[in-house]
Length: 318
Image 1 (cartoon, one colour):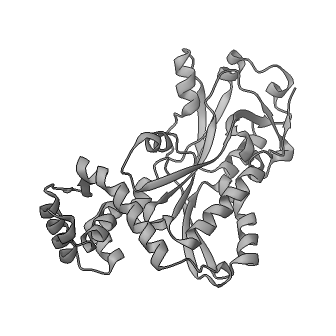
Image 2 (cartoon, helix red, strand yellow):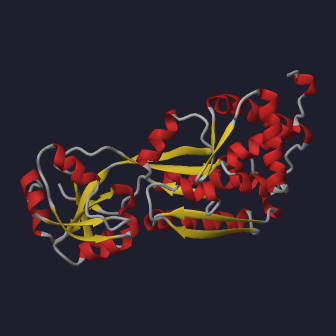
Image 3 (tube, one colour):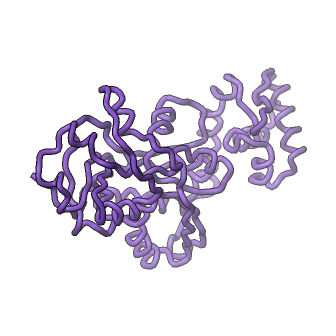
């Protein structure tokens, strides 16, 4: 193959298919038919002498050659796009609708500020919230069900930090700590919270899936201890109301306590064992990365992160 005879339009199709990991979605993005996309990939295979993309039950899987080639193709196309279509984005005239997935606590903290920014700067931007019921939002992003996910995704963030070729992008917004939360007149609020006392209490677990096992239980198992989870709920707001009106205790990220709406009735204590930090990450798809409106949204969330994270609104018991 000679580069002079290579049809560069094939690289644009290749980029779209690599981004979407699916021929049908790539065809829609390119305003082409699926057979036309398939034919373009076939011609590129013949030119490069590599399969490039292997069909799977869920779409296509890139070969090592495709994964190695894609970053250079994507960078070159981005440079060409910037050169021939200089950005003239005016957020005050933008018309866009974004579907975002967040847990209720994060949404309660950030949406008021985001709405003020939109009303002030971007009156044509709309937000549609989608329930976040999983720690693995990548399938939702790949299918195009959502445009942005914000939450605690420990496995995903760790994998993306060393994975190459993924169309999912991520950014860490901030890190916090977990604390033990109880009502302010709880019997345990009057004494030192040691490991034995903690394990003997009745516990509430915030679990999106309803599964009665979480990060705390994994940490306790490593030191040969366990606790009784009397109740699981799937919302931080519900957790706050239950704990404020019962003898159950729970573990929450300290910065999310204010979202329960019960901070005047709650206190927090340091945990009598070690837990990893809780990270809040923002995930999006590569196809949206170049959108000026999407970038404006991400920049707003970045700006909110620092001011939203430190405030708990609740009193620590000494």
